Length: 89
Image (cartoon, rainbow, N blue to C red):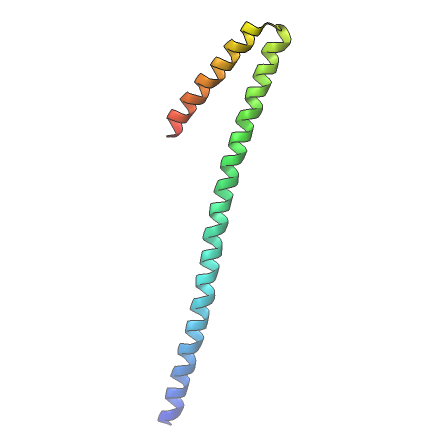
């Protein structure tokens, strides 16, 4: 009888350790997935910013093909990028 109880206890401990290992693996996978999602989210934001910059540049350039206008726009974009970096940092 006592041996049966010990056998059951050992069986339960073994089952617990197996399930805990599975749980830990799932938690790690979730952590990695969340990190990947955050990485892709930042990449999307950066790409959207680049698209907006290109749209703005093209809008200004279509009205004036002047080199001076290009330089002003480039300076504006660099200044906006610096401001965004300061806000994010």
